[in-house]
Length: 115
Length: 107
Image 1 (cartoon, each protein chain N blue to C red):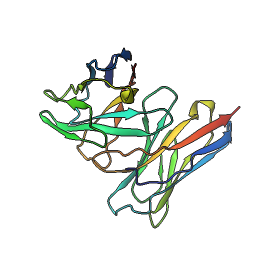
Image 2 (cartoon, chains in turn blue, yellow):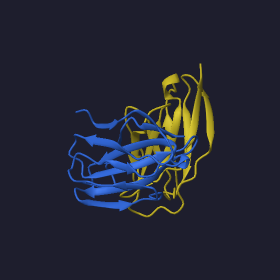
Image 3 (cartoon, one colour):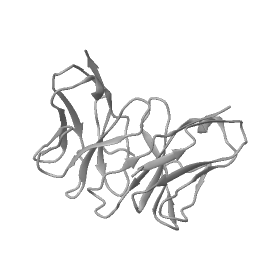
Image 4 (cartoon, rainbow over the protein chains, first blue to last red):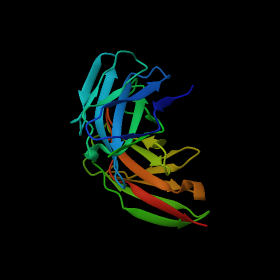
Protein backbone atom coordinates (compact mmCIF):
# COMPACT_ATOMS: atom_id res chain seq x y z
CA UNK A 1 0.00 0.00 0.00
CA UNK A 2 1.18 3.50 -0.81
CA UNK A 3 -0.83 4.87 2.13
CA UNK A 4 -1.75 8.54 1.84
CA UNK A 5 -0.22 10.40 -1.08
CA UNK A 6 -0.28 14.13 -1.72
CA UNK A 7 0.59 16.23 -4.74
CA UNK A 8 2.29 18.55 -5.30
CA UNK A 9 5.06 18.55 -2.70
CA UNK A 10 5.77 22.25 -3.13
CA UNK A 11 3.95 25.12 -4.79
CA UNK A 12 4.30 28.87 -5.01
CA UNK A 13 1.17 30.84 -5.83
CA UNK A 14 0.58 34.48 -6.53
CA UNK A 15 -2.06 36.34 -4.57
CA UNK A 16 -5.47 35.74 -6.11
CA UNK A 17 -4.55 32.53 -7.92
CA UNK A 18 -6.38 29.26 -7.29
CA UNK A 19 -5.17 25.71 -7.02
CA UNK A 20 -6.18 22.22 -5.95
CA UNK A 21 -4.17 20.10 -3.56
CA UNK A 22 -4.60 16.44 -4.32
CA UNK A 23 -4.90 13.67 -1.74
CA UNK A 24 -5.38 9.96 -2.37
CA UNK A 25 -5.44 6.98 -0.02
CA UNK A 26 -5.45 3.31 -0.96
CA UNK A 27 -6.48 1.84 2.40
CA UNK A 28 -10.25 2.04 1.81
CA UNK A 29 -10.60 4.41 4.75
CA UNK A 30 -13.90 6.16 5.29
CA UNK A 31 -12.63 9.23 7.14
CA UNK A 32 -10.35 11.74 5.46
CA UNK A 33 -9.02 15.05 6.78
CA UNK A 34 -7.22 18.17 5.69
CA UNK A 35 -4.99 20.04 8.14
CA UNK A 36 -2.76 23.04 7.86
CA UNK A 37 0.33 23.66 9.95
CA UNK A 38 1.86 27.09 10.33
CA UNK A 39 5.51 27.38 11.45
CA UNK A 40 6.04 26.29 15.07
CA UNK A 41 2.37 25.48 15.54
CA UNK A 42 0.26 22.36 15.82
CA UNK A 43 -2.06 21.16 13.09
CA UNK A 44 -5.41 22.85 12.56
CA UNK A 45 -8.29 20.99 10.94
CA UNK A 46 -9.64 22.60 7.76
CA UNK A 47 -12.22 20.11 6.51
CA UNK A 48 -13.03 16.47 6.99
CA UNK A 49 -15.13 13.79 5.33
CA UNK A 50 -16.81 10.72 6.79
CA UNK A 51 -17.39 9.09 3.42
CA UNK A 52 -17.96 9.74 -0.27
CA UNK A 53 -20.33 12.65 -0.75
CA UNK A 54 -20.16 13.82 2.88
CA UNK A 55 -17.92 16.66 4.05
CA UNK A 56 -17.91 19.05 6.98
CA UNK A 57 -16.00 22.06 8.21
CA UNK A 58 -13.22 21.95 10.74
CA UNK A 59 -11.68 24.79 12.74
CA UNK A 60 -10.34 26.92 9.88
CA UNK A 61 -12.42 26.35 6.69
CA UNK A 62 -12.53 29.91 5.34
CA UNK A 63 -10.86 30.26 1.96
CA UNK A 64 -11.02 26.53 1.18
CA UNK A 65 -13.40 24.07 -0.41
CA UNK A 66 -13.45 20.29 -0.59
CA UNK A 67 -15.28 17.52 -2.36
CA UNK A 68 -15.35 13.75 -1.92
CA UNK A 69 -16.68 11.94 -4.95
CA UNK A 70 -14.82 8.68 -4.26
CA UNK A 71 -13.56 6.87 -1.19
CA UNK A 72 -9.98 7.27 -2.34
CA UNK A 73 -9.74 10.97 -3.20
CA UNK A 74 -10.22 14.12 -1.14
CA UNK A 75 -9.00 17.23 -2.99
CA UNK A 76 -8.66 20.61 -1.28
CA UNK A 77 -9.40 23.69 -3.35
CA UNK A 78 -7.93 27.11 -2.59
CA UNK A 79 -9.80 29.97 -4.22
CA UNK A 80 -8.22 33.45 -4.40
CA UNK A 81 -5.02 32.58 -2.57
CA UNK A 82 -3.89 34.96 0.17
CA UNK A 83 -0.53 35.23 2.02
CA UNK A 84 -2.29 33.98 5.17
CA UNK A 85 -2.69 30.62 3.43
CA UNK A 86 1.06 30.11 3.31
CA UNK A 87 1.44 26.90 5.27
CA UNK A 88 2.14 23.19 5.10
CA UNK A 89 -0.96 21.17 4.28
CA UNK A 90 -1.41 17.60 5.46
CA UNK A 91 -4.00 15.12 4.33
CA UNK A 92 -4.89 12.18 6.58
CA UNK A 93 -7.18 9.19 6.61
CA UNK A 94 -8.68 6.87 9.19
CA UNK A 95 -10.75 3.73 8.97
CA UNK A 96 -13.52 4.77 11.40
CA UNK A 97 -14.47 1.17 12.00
CA UNK A 98 -13.79 1.68 15.69
CA UNK A 99 -13.25 5.38 15.68
CA UNK A 100 -11.91 5.86 19.15
CA UNK A 101 -9.09 3.41 18.66
CA UNK A 102 -8.34 3.86 14.99
CA UNK A 103 -5.05 5.39 14.09
CA UNK A 104 -4.79 8.20 11.62
CA UNK A 105 -2.40 8.03 8.68
CA UNK A 106 -0.87 11.20 7.32
CA UNK A 107 0.51 12.11 3.96
CA UNK A 108 3.92 13.76 3.50
CA UNK A 109 2.47 17.25 3.16
CA UNK A 110 2.32 20.04 0.58
CA UNK A 111 4.34 23.17 1.30
CA UNK A 112 2.47 26.16 -0.13
CA UNK A 113 3.78 29.69 -0.36
CA UNK A 114 1.56 32.59 -1.45
CA UNK A 115 3.41 35.69 -2.58
CA UNK B 1 -9.31 23.11 20.28
CA UNK B 2 -6.80 20.81 21.96
CA UNK B 3 -8.04 19.42 25.25
CA UNK B 4 -4.64 18.38 26.59
CA UNK B 5 -1.72 20.22 28.18
CA UNK B 6 1.91 19.34 27.53
CA UNK B 7 5.27 20.99 28.31
CA UNK B 8 6.69 22.94 25.40
CA UNK B 9 10.02 21.12 25.30
CA UNK B 10 12.14 18.41 26.88
CA UNK B 11 15.74 17.37 26.47
CA UNK B 12 17.35 13.99 26.89
CA UNK B 13 20.64 12.27 26.37
CA UNK B 14 20.92 9.47 23.88
CA UNK B 15 20.09 6.03 25.26
CA UNK B 16 18.41 7.48 28.33
CA UNK B 17 14.67 7.23 29.00
CA UNK B 18 12.35 10.11 28.24
CA UNK B 19 9.12 10.67 30.16
CA UNK B 20 6.65 12.98 28.42
CA UNK B 21 3.75 14.12 30.62
CA UNK B 22 0.29 15.08 29.45
CA UNK B 23 -2.68 16.47 31.37
CA UNK B 24 -6.21 15.73 30.14
CA UNK B 25 -8.38 16.67 33.09
CA UNK B 26 -11.63 16.88 31.07
CA UNK B 27 -11.40 13.41 29.61
CA UNK B 28 -14.59 11.33 29.51
CA UNK B 29 -14.79 7.70 30.44
CA UNK B 30 -14.74 6.52 26.83
CA UNK B 31 -12.15 8.85 25.34
CA UNK B 32 -8.90 7.23 24.33
CA UNK B 33 -5.56 8.95 24.67
CA UNK B 34 -3.51 8.86 21.51
CA UNK B 35 0.09 9.91 21.02
CA UNK B 36 1.49 10.96 17.69
CA UNK B 37 4.88 12.32 16.81
CA UNK B 38 6.11 14.49 13.98
CA UNK B 39 9.64 14.14 12.76
CA UNK B 40 11.19 17.19 11.06
CA UNK B 41 9.62 17.95 7.67
CA UNK B 42 7.26 14.97 7.87
CA UNK B 43 3.62 14.35 8.62
CA UNK B 44 2.62 13.09 12.06
CA UNK B 45 2.83 9.37 12.74
CA UNK B 46 1.03 7.24 15.27
CA UNK B 47 2.94 6.19 18.38
CA UNK B 48 0.55 4.55 20.83
CA UNK B 49 -2.91 4.80 22.36
CA UNK B 50 -4.68 3.64 25.50
CA UNK B 51 -7.85 3.89 27.58
CA UNK B 52 -7.25 2.85 31.19
CA UNK B 53 -4.37 0.47 31.63
CA UNK B 54 -0.74 0.84 30.69
CA UNK B 55 0.17 -0.04 27.12
CA UNK B 56 3.40 -1.09 25.47
CA UNK B 57 4.47 -1.39 21.87
CA UNK B 58 7.73 -1.47 19.99
CA UNK B 59 8.00 2.30 19.96
CA UNK B 60 7.02 3.32 23.48
CA UNK B 61 5.04 2.72 26.64
CA UNK B 62 2.00 4.65 27.81
CA UNK B 63 1.25 4.97 31.51
CA UNK B 64 -2.24 6.28 32.31
CA UNK B 65 -3.06 7.59 35.76
CA UNK B 66 -5.73 5.78 37.72
CA UNK B 67 -8.06 8.82 37.55
CA UNK B 68 -7.26 9.15 33.82
CA UNK B 69 -6.61 12.87 34.15
CA UNK B 70 -3.01 12.50 33.09
CA UNK B 71 -0.71 10.16 31.22
CA UNK B 72 2.98 9.74 30.47
CA UNK B 73 4.60 8.58 27.26
CA UNK B 74 7.84 6.74 27.93
CA UNK B 75 10.57 6.34 25.37
CA UNK B 76 12.75 3.74 27.03
CA UNK B 77 16.05 4.47 25.30
CA UNK B 78 16.02 7.67 23.31
CA UNK B 79 17.91 7.75 20.04
CA UNK B 80 18.70 10.68 17.80
CA UNK B 81 15.89 9.49 15.54
CA UNK B 82 13.39 10.10 18.34
CA UNK B 83 13.93 13.86 18.14
CA UNK B 84 10.48 15.11 17.17
CA UNK B 85 7.38 16.94 18.33
CA UNK B 86 5.17 14.63 20.40
CA UNK B 87 1.44 15.24 20.53
CA UNK B 88 -0.89 13.93 23.23
CA UNK B 89 -4.47 13.83 21.93
CA UNK B 90 -7.83 13.10 23.52
CA UNK B 91 -9.33 11.28 20.57
CA UNK B 92 -12.81 11.38 19.18
CA UNK B 93 -13.88 11.30 15.50
CA UNK B 94 -11.23 13.91 14.81
CA UNK B 95 -7.84 14.59 16.31
CA UNK B 96 -7.21 18.03 17.79
CA UNK B 97 -3.52 18.88 17.83
CA UNK B 98 -2.02 21.29 20.30
CA UNK B 99 1.55 22.58 20.05
CA UNK B 100 2.97 19.34 21.46
CA UNK B 101 6.28 18.76 23.23
CA UNK B 102 9.48 19.23 21.26
CA UNK B 103 11.94 16.52 22.26
CA UNK B 104 15.64 17.14 21.74
CA UNK B 105 18.06 14.23 22.06
CA UNK B 106 21.72 14.97 22.77
CA UNK B 107 24.36 12.62 21.43
